[in-house]
Image (cartoon, rainbow, N blue to C red; front, side):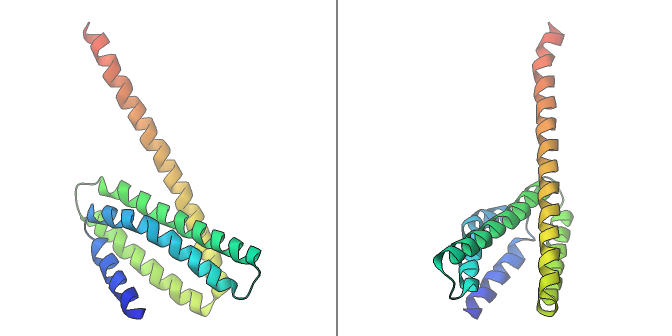
Length: 153
């Protein structure tokens, strides 16, 4: 199990540094990450009744899905930049934050959970604001394209 986890981490580490390869890797991970989160949530329930296991699985899978959507959405926005520096910088920053949060979770589990929750909420808000900005830009671009033939006529 550790060998498989190490191999997948190495794949993730390399794939995240290459623009558009990371988006392809995120497509594959859209199935894997929420499923793994749900399984971990059920395993953490231990010998709980089925309702507690279902809740833990839903929370684990939902949290994994939301964090994956933040990561994949931010990478799509970063990939729109023509140079690879932002993609590599974002990937290295992400790796450092994950390692720091894992260490913090080992030392202070409750505080790390709170930090992870805040980071997830901030990421979702930033992603929603970016989506609104992109949607507004598309509407303006479409409006200018429609207005152009009338201005010529």
